[in-house]
Image (cartoon, rainbow, N blue to C red; front, top):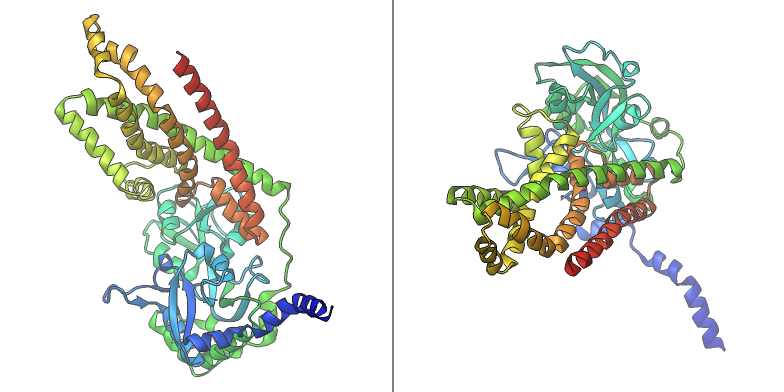
Length: 488
């Protein structure tokens, strides 16, 4: 009896005992001798980037700041590469100890992460084309397509003022603005000065708001936040932070506030903690719109890939040698390079020659890529048809085009149908890559909503359900067609 009672007590209090035995965050950092910090090299200069003079070596004002903080803590800094828009989820899963990469203090992040005292005060800088006088400030952005970074302070400012066009990189928004694909760009002044203002055909409208960069940590590790705040205060007090900012030419009068930063200022910066929005019908409607965009891109891209792939297969199998070589080279190039790279080249690299909008580029890029795969599917189907079929067609007096149309291709299509169906289902999922050229499809909408509601569980489940709802009926339809063709 006493043994059973003891087991029950241990069972009830085991989680608390285990939690009490876990080392604190600072103890973990001290024991490992490493402060792991997350950032994204795609953010580029002056944040964190590879030093062109020393390949493989990191440079940037945040690299130096991370080293200075780690030194104050008595450890060394260790950089972890991570996509910028996914830094917070990666912090939550324990990939690194802190985020230090131009992470802005925003309403959606307050409460989800613990912010240190700020280490930089930035301005949101609005830019437009010199030949477009319409853009005069935030109030003039109604109805405009304004570029900014996904999950940024600027994107929150634009949510009710314009049609935000969301990017993953810092140079692409200004390229699109210069080429007339968007009407304005709102980004941090550091980014605007290096990537926007060098464009001769763009102008600075003005600085329309201020924000803060701060180190982000898990709210469950308050001891680490206290240690980071003390380290930052020491770095600011002895002028080391000012020296770092001067080396990268980003020091200005706004940074003087950091020397007298108080807990009152900290509370004002964070504001009142807001509860995470509950996922509702408005989010579901956005998911449906994203699913429609995914289906539209996939269907139109496959409509391009099927006939083009068939033409490539016929060229390789029945065309003259020069045509077969060209078709073979096309297939190898498009199968051997990432579709993401192809989308970048088509949308940005060839913009001075062919200026397509994002949707047209998505359809054309995916269609051209999948045409290479379809070509091999059809070529395999053609090769699987017995050679005697074409011989019999010739014996009946048919020309080659007529024999292909009436004898060979119907049989080859029946053999290729399962693989074609599989390719279309794969295309549905690969369409998520078009978000890099600002097309908001289903997966992109899921990531936006996940940040909004501070959870990936329900948005991820809904996203998966919609993908399944689009792909499963297609596979069922393909089976019906296969059965009918087999009977025929």
